[in-house]
Amino acid sequence: MAKINKLGVQLYTIRDFMGNEESVKESFAKLKALGIDEVQTAGCAIAYDKFGALAKEAGLTVVGTHDDFDAMHKDPVGYMKLHDDLGTKMMGNGGYWGEKAEDYLAFASKVNELCSVIGEKGFKFSYHNHGHEFTKFDGKIAMDILAENMDPRYATFCLDTYWVQYGGGDVRAWIKKLAGRIEILHLKDMGFKGGQFITEIGNGNLYWDGIIDAANEAGVKHFVIEQDSCPGNPFDSLAKSVEYLKKYL
Image 1: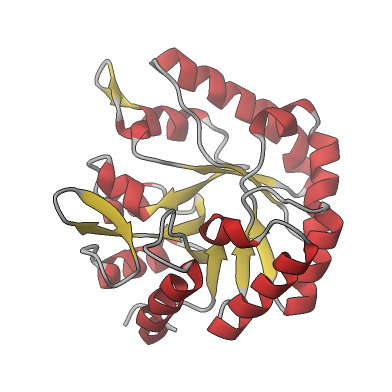
Image 2 (image 1 turned 90 degrees about the vertical axis):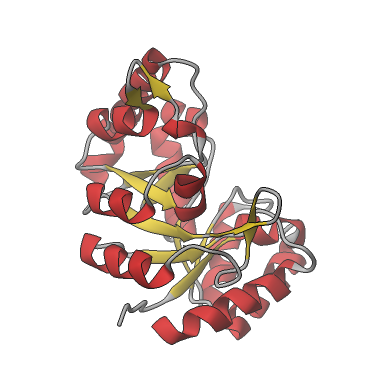
């Protein structure tokens, strides 16, 4: 039986409830009550040190970020300090949008420049995919360009299950392909009603037994729920996803 040790949430899911210190504190308490133990940031509306302290106070561990890549690349030392304030060594971005193969090669080079500074300090970089990275350039998709050219020692992937499927990729095959390089797996389900849409885990069509088995075999460390859009209150959607995933805990 596929297993998950702890569940996390990408805070972009509840972004409308993270605007100030009080709302962050209240939201963290709600997440903990749902059975969430880990969180991944999507920017911080309050000071990083206060954000990290509130997460710790709520019993939540920050396992990574989606932050401003250009800012991290320009000031890696400063951003290592900010990530230390959060309590995480995983410095991530939310994606990169290139128009040709050379763009992705150039981005991979900048990632390696960042990694050359942060890697020796115990930090890693995490790249989050969407569907557009499955665009082919002269027969090679952008995801392959990134995987082949980013430093495998310090550049990891935050693989997003929905967007792999959306881009026409095989989720389990990509998990296997990136084995040992996926620190964070975004659990995101895909429904269909006249087109694909993001939905609660278990409410869509992705094969979770197989995905989680593959993730365990590939050494995925953190299983993080993300729901970009919710039909109502995102905490209600998260509750449904957590309830479905309880069988794996």
